[in-house]
View 1 (tube, helix red, strand yellow):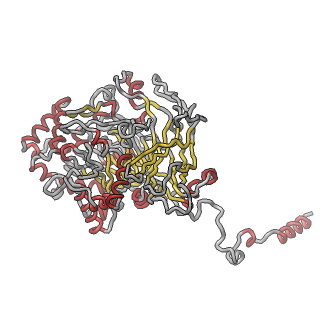
View 2 (cartoon, one colour):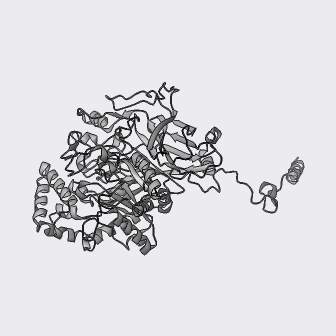
View 3 (cartoon, helix red, strand yellow):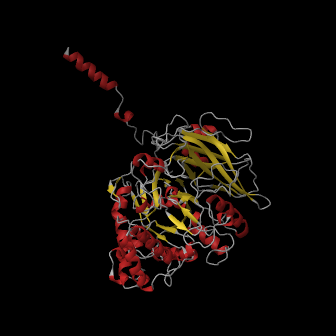
Length: 638
């Protein structure tokens, strides 16, 4: 029996396929080598992942953060963003449910380190009358401290700081150099390519007479290059509030170091009409060929949403858009001496700026407002925490407490921003090949980004001339998107005999968030008469709703339970997508298209506060909202 078994085994081995047959060699595949790959992801050079982060966060090193009580620093900011538990400046334990993938810490470039020294009563500050006045007010606490902090900020915006203080806390001083070095060192310590990206950056704080013209400066580079410069400030004689001078600084940095950097404009809704000029800048310069070319070169992104209001659209500017009045802040900023006018609004909001950019391009040859979208917190708490149920506010004074809804955030001569008006927003999604400084920065520069008001909604948006429904139904729409068209942030290629462009959009709800209500495509265009126009199209929606005779889609419904601070995903859809062709396309008219994705209604942060603290929500406070995502536009040029 043993011999028979051995013989059978030998025969089987002789008849079995050879090792070469199981493992083909280059020689055995002659004529078809290299072999095709089975894996659909191998040998692809396209962005397959979206990475979430915040382009705008302050620690106690920023003067206004420190003055309002933030005693936490760089380490806490990075640790929190990476998903670790930290303790906030008000003493509360704080943690994100999900870590972020990247962060840009943007301390104000002016007066770095000043707040820390003021609070400890540094002798050089107390030697000035104003310095002693501020110190005594802050030491008194309560209303006196708030008044002292606001007076200091207003004095700064008016350019009236004591020259001795300016000297001690400006580039060239030992204090300033040490603070900048510590910012760079922290970014280098926490930067872990592939796991977490810590960008080096700062905020250029141009705010002459209360006109908020701030820009965040984001470096592509490591510390060895960033340490060759110091940030640009706004206080004369070494600084400037003119953005053209900032562009010169950016160019000088690249020329000196061989590195890369860009600036990101933000919060135009409190610029008092100066964020998107069309005739003259606030510095008195003409909006000319040089201005539009420089702005187009250095500002690839715009912060469309943040804690101080949503900046996409305004109901006055977009009366036909039923969703334009979302988290709207439209009072004047800081020490504005006259009330905000409708004319100011037209130069403050992203959609209007995109339209004005088409007009300026026709006039001057370059579109200065050809920007992509980002979302950010602008939190001054060191905490990038903007989920409605985990919201830590704008400043330490606005961190969770039973009374934070009742305390006005700020007051001006022509309006009040109430505490309950602060917005739990936002984050930026970046489509990149990997989680590194270079890959993320490159994606930002090419505008392959989108902003959300907090939820991590996944959105793909492609434009081309021959997308069909099968491209979307392949379940790998990105592959077809890159092969047949261009992604968000890009320009449509030249038409190839098609009657109108086609757009492929796909949205997937935040896995732990609310279902989706609808997907909209917002179009802006310049017609043959030079008029600027806009239209919002509902292109995909949930629950089998039918558009009315006027083309409007019925509301999705509302499952919010205010008593429990809860909602149900019994309405809406987990994913929505479509291929859409512009029915009003004119090949002679320049245009842009971007996607707005709306969630079903959910509770605002004030509802969570009311339930957890057992307090009433102030009259006039919005309790329910529809959070959203905004993709960078795709442009068409005849």
